[in-house]
Amino acid sequence: MHFKKFLTPMMAPLALSLAFGLAACGDDSTSGTPDPVVDPTLDPGTTIPTDPGTTIPTDPGTTTPTDPGTTVPVDPGTTTPTDPGTTTPVTNPGTAWTSPVALAASANPAYPANVYALWKPSHFATLEDELVYYSSSAADFAEIFTAQYLPAGRVLWSNQNTGYYKQSCLNKDSDVASMKYRGCTVSEGVGYGMLLTYFNGDDDAFVRIWNYSRAFRDYYGVELTPWITFSFAKKVDYTSATDADLDIATSLILMYYKTGSVAYLTDAQRIMKAIWDYEINKTSLLIYSGDDDMWQGADPVYNLSYFSPVALRLFAMVDTDPSHNWTGVLDAMYAYMTMVQNAGTGVFPDWSNSAGVAVDPDNGSAAKTYWTFNKESVRIPWRIAWDYYWFQDERALAILTKLNTFISGKSGGDPSSNALMVNYSWDPAKNDAASTGTATPSHWLGAWCVTGFGSNPTWVSACTDLFNTRTPANTGSSYFTDILMGIYSALLNGNFVRPF
Image (cartoon, rainbow, N blue to C red; front, top):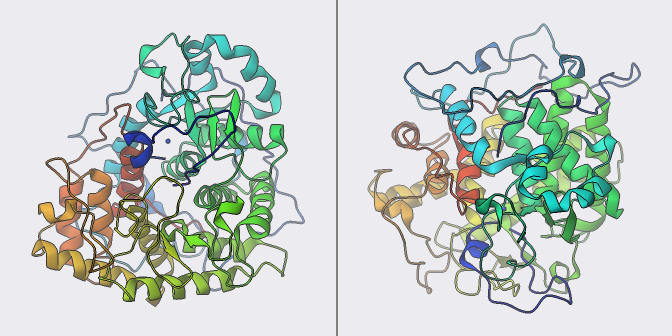
């Protein structure tokens, strides 16, 4: 999560709210919306790069059947239209890709589809919806979201009814009471939303969220998505959060492989260039947390949950600029991550410096938790397990195995143990963070589940069975838990299908 102590000179230094500390950020689309504005034509002179030795078929086993025992409460009068003319699937007659990494025997592709169907009405809103929620802002919407950025949609951040962002995310004129304090979207949610819609085959919502990012970038003349924006109306801060930029570019590359549309690749390359220019430490090749000066001083503070190995591999495949050493960044980040993990208890601190020591990022978000495996690090298992699931990197396996050995020891091998609720300290000299609640939050459970990939199939099976009994909370404060639950559910149940 990309938090800043001071965002604009107009904002008073208010105390950070609980929601701000726990989270960084839906209604279905209606029929009759304009067709997504993308270039459906693959330039005849453009080839789709592939990983040597891999093929580009669609996995025939990746259909998402409806579990006859599961109900999906959606509005029966709502549909999510997609223009069949905007997709040009890239196929190859070879053998379909299948990961050699074993999932639970009970892995069920219908489960993440149901999670997504439950998630979307509560956490996704179209521009058409917002014209009802925030009718007083209609003129501002039209200024930024001109015809080329329609249709559009956004992922709703958590309620900001107290704390630093209360005024920025408040619309007093909201015609829907529950939306008064949910006016903001964070770029992290844009990235997660694009990945989630991609893996669930929701092309309409994908294009809408992509247009949300494009409209703000182009209106403000920035290359990277502003890290926090208000509805479809204005930016709150135009500095970047690197994890979001990596995820947005990754999702565009995946959609390029799926459809063949060069428009996706072109925008991904634009973002990749900006990531290289502004968010990579050219000396160490480590990933900065954003483009702001506060992240790039003499001794930068790093966030290992921003490291997305799959993103870097995809960038290396499609980037045409040989000066962008994405493989070097991948190797440097894996070496750094391994160093940090091995120097501590087996888990990761949320923030660390170039020497691999846990440090307070001094941005007001983690003064009492920075040394713990906490609200930042909960994303690390997903990113590393994704890399292992697709590419079987031994470095990824070693990291996951150490995490799994740690939590298996703490829990006695039982994923239902409350031991999974604890935010453990990386530093043996410091205390763990106290647990709250009565059950492990769903995104935390998913994180611990995937640590067993490649080393502990018994754990993966038992943990997946438990995870697949959960449903999204769908409250005004469950943005972070629910969207990560959607991502972990897709990975655990085999819906992270490699498109090349």
